Amino acid sequence: MRDSRRLRQGAIVSNLPVHAERPAHRTVRWVIGGCAALVATISMAALSLAPASGSTDPSVTLGYFTGSQATPATVIATDAALEKTIPAKISWSPVTAGVTALAEMESGSLLSVTGVGNPPVVGAIGNGVNVDVLWADSLTASTLIVSKSITKPSQLAGKTVGDLEGSSTDFQLRGWLSVEHLTKSVTVDGFPSVAAVAAAFLAGKLQGAYVAGVQSTELIAKGSHVLVNSKQIAAVGYGGFGVLAVAHSLIQSDPTLVQKYVCASLTAIDDILGHDSARYFKASAKLLGVPVKTAVTAGDASVSYYITPSQEKSWLEGSNGSTATGKLTSDYLTTAKFDLSSGRIKSIPSRATVASHIDPTFALKALAGHCS
Image (tube, rainbow, N blue to C red; front, side, top):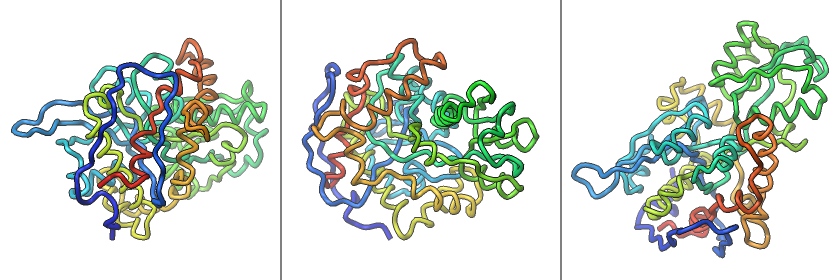
């Protein structure tokens, strides 16, 4: 049962300033208490505001990633009591790729989404999309699946592997291939969804598939095996991760809504990491479009990839309280080189520019216990 210490009662008071223009970096002075929780990733694609008929609360569209893994968004969407803590009439919209979600955000049809990866976020920042990152949620939990005949990286030479095009996994896979000196000898095909990658592998069109969740489990069950995983790739300098990102315009226009959404996400993370997590994985299954057993298996496997509350502050800001020295800014600058080489951006944004798109205010306020 959910711990009543979080969010269930009371209003959240937000006196956050409206940001007239972006500073070179942000410095936040909230002191984090001993909250054993984490806030959720919501990436950039969802929250289009419109007044709800007969209600003072706005109508919003929130995005969530499909697949087999429950996220804070799917937990909130399938928990009526938790959803009601957010002062809005919510419609939930499924997304399959961060690039697509951020394009919708740029058009104004979406203002937030859960779990967007580093390359799409950096691409958006580099192209002037006015979006803010509010939380570093979890590491990418992917594996490179190959046939049993391939037992070492060098055996991939002359072969084709697939991944989700333009995503964190694409950044990771290409980075790992460069470390293994295989960039020129291995072809990487990008696909619009992880399911499409797995299907191409099963059809014999690929010799390697960088996938996660149910797709990884399925390919292993059919006789393939893992050559390398995302944690191993992160260890050589190419980490993939998902974040909560929200349109800067929403933060300006309704910071109270944003704060309550972050607090609800924090509660959802408590649920995902708690002893009763299977309950929330099962509830998310229908929204994800997968069998209950699959959702539970994938959820259990993903728990160890979440960034813990004790680590969160160092992701958002450095020891001096500046976003310019935090892990997110540094990792985004590394990712920018990938985006530049792939043609997603025309130049690498400055450290100050990247830092100005990271706003830890809402997350640190939630972690400090200011949600009720």
